[in-house]
Length: 246
View 1: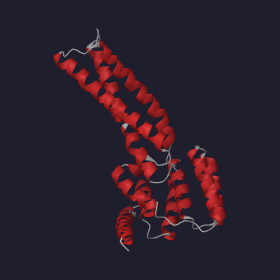
View 2: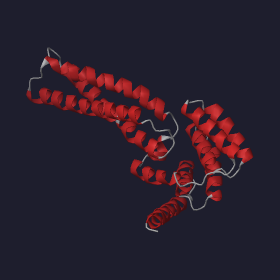
View 3: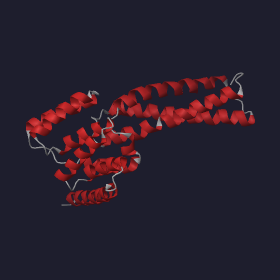
View 4: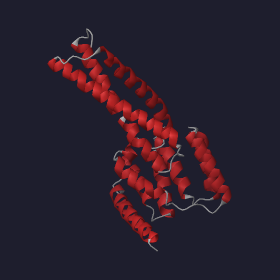
């Protein structure tokens, strides 16, 4: 690529590899967050963001491979290859800005460190019971809107009002707990997930979140809660399957 030195070319390899790995978190987490019901889905926006992220990832990988080959065996790289670098940079900047804004801090990384596992438990959230109190239901939606707008202080305030009206609102307990965990207030998050699991002991999602935060806090019972969460998930899936054939 022109008269670039080996050092400059290795720098480009490093940047390209960062594109590939740096966008991995967003391309893995965003679909999980959407499918878990923690964000309202806007098909066109989400699909475009994911498409851009995937393009950026593979553009970075291709750039890194071709330049590494050039460094080792002198394979010529045309000057037009700068297009890939510019394209990769654009994708990275766009996705890093939009993707992280959408994901925000709503689900701390340690909660979904095993993404496929979280996605399995995330489906359980859709099965959580709804509140029968219309005022609490309306307020909870206001809290979700504040959360999506990243006004987490307002969201917590609204969730507290909801829980005064209906202390058994499981979805609200979980939503408030996740925000506390995002703020590194793990003990508050643990207490809320514990309440949610007591209100709905058959829920896989509540117990899974409880096990994650207990693991972070070094509480040994996290293993028992994770096993129970897996059992509950199997029961939920079996019941759902049987209901389809009734």
